[in-house]
Amino acid sequence: MTNKPLEILANCSASRSDQIVAALQTVRELHSSREWFVFEYVKCKDESVRVSVYSPTQEWIGDFKLEPFPGINNVIVSTQVVIEEKQRGKGWGRLLNRLRVRAMSLAGYSRMLATVRNDNLGEEHILETNGWKRLTTFDSNLNASGEVSLWERIL
Ligand SMILES: CC(C)(COP(=O)(O)OP(=O)(O)OC[C@H]1O[C@@H](n2cnc3c(N)ncnc32)[C@H](O)[C@@H]1OP(=O)(O)O)[C@@H](O)C(=O)NCCC(=O)NCCS
Image (cartoon, rainbow, N blue to C red):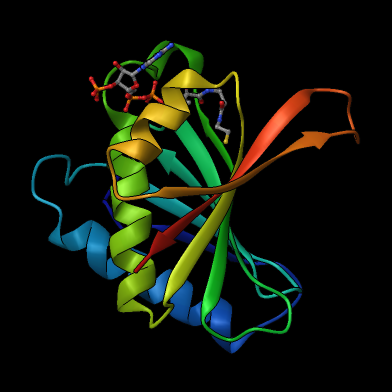
């Protein structure tokens, strides 16, 4: 198997999702220490891009999604970040966070937003040590999961 990412087009071809994929691919190729990981992209109708990360032997490492903020051209939301349980604690969460930041800066976005549950100390630690700022904290009533914070990264 090569390192070429699989690209799946989910019902549409949207220019913003194309830019997101191109920037992610550029940054992945520039990355020297784990150049062997593979991205699989799903471009969605709403111009968001879902990314799955695999080892060359097709082991799933994790997922994340990047969604352009509705109605604003230069803001992007990072969401649905997950690292496969067996792969946690190996630096993947931090690496992929840095990679998203670099790629979305390259794609021309000026800020990235994310929400994180306040009891998610691992993710909070990654954000705090990668230039993110907590904007506000509020109660998440949708799923009764307690307090969440809105975080911002200036790109
Ligand atoms: C949160 C998550 C993405 C982190 O991914 P990961 O690959 O395990 O993280 P990393 O190995 O890159 O780094 C974790 C960092 O957090 C630190 N950390 C882990 N648990 C911690 C805790 N309870 N308190 C403080 N720091 C913690 C680690 O020490 C490490 O810091 P370091 O790089 O300074 O040594 C992963 O645990 C996950 O997928 N969780 C379930 C889904 C989730 O919570 N997604 C985020 C939703 S916003």
